[in-house]
Length: 250
Image 1 (tube, rainbow, N blue to C red):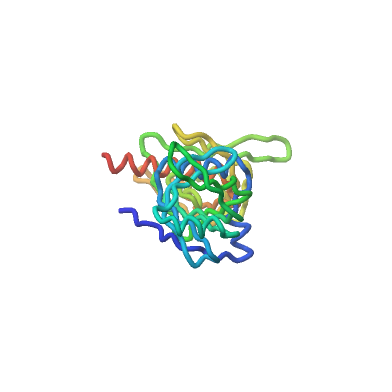
Image 2 (cartoon, rainbow, N blue to C red):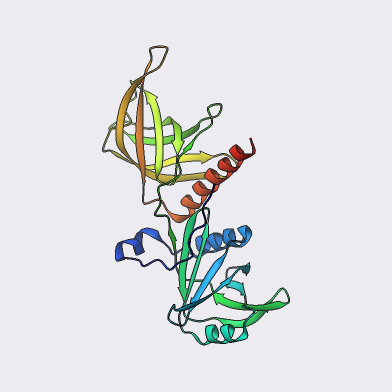
């Protein structure tokens, strides 16, 4: 059962600002479109963050976003006079937050609305443990790891046993030495069925040897994603969410 994300303002440190910030306009628009499609609740704080209204997104495009106005005229007027607004919402169990310097009053779909310009950056804040999805046994995902040697360059296809927003569990044969604890591998490709492929950097955090019932020895590596970009994170969360929904239906 999913829990609602509290729509409270998150206080960010300087390290958090870099780690959780998305600055690409297209990625920002995609995140807000996802909030719009899921009809997620939004808290819009104003008046030095001492007051807020609960609202929903009416529309989003490359220029900005339109939000439903409050039923209280006084609240709308105070919000319009505020020179700092803080938008707090969530999508796929991840908090989304950004600031805006002001809102304007307009209409959208024939009803009163606030318009905010598309923010220059947003924060996606996932401080809980990542949900780890075990991949389907019948159709395992593959992680394609490029490896360069002195005389050649080739790629290893390694089976993904589980995947989350934080990393992947990989398995390979005992003779395949591509997975070395402490090593970092860049430009690894993962193709997510019906969602898309992405490239990322993984770091091998641990490695164990397992013996199968048939007597075969395999390597099992726990790997962490390093500095995964916003677009890749969105694809990954979309895949995990769709697989969770499929399991619920089954």
